[in-house]
Length: 143
Image (tube, rainbow, N blue to C red; front, side, top):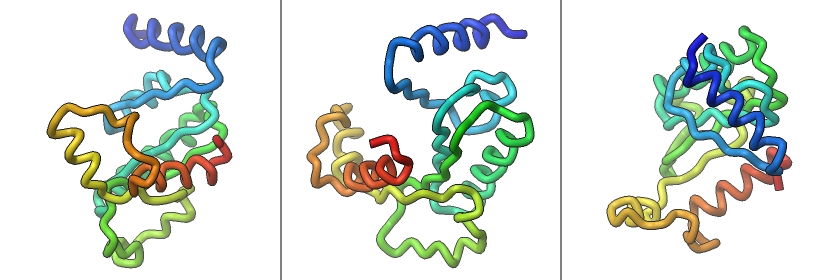
């Protein structure tokens, strides 16, 4: 039992009754899984960078969520900050067996906004990352 985690669970439970979508951004790792702060969710996106160690960690998170029987309806793996030359075959792992749903490419507009503490919500619709996220949301049947 941990008071901050219990408070977070109660808060999420209350707001999820009021909103169609609740988005949580957790820090990397599995600690939030074992503390069950990400329990009873419709979609869990596990984000990894296109490196073998990052993908293996993401797969471990997916396996752990299933092993501890979190109430998660769908789990998807997303590769973030990919380059045009990213070759999934070189990563030597079958991503599709772990709910691989898509890649979000590196986008200079995001880098520029980050350097200027700019707003990511106002990225143009033709942004590479915005297009990729839209496609992932369609595949996940969120939009």
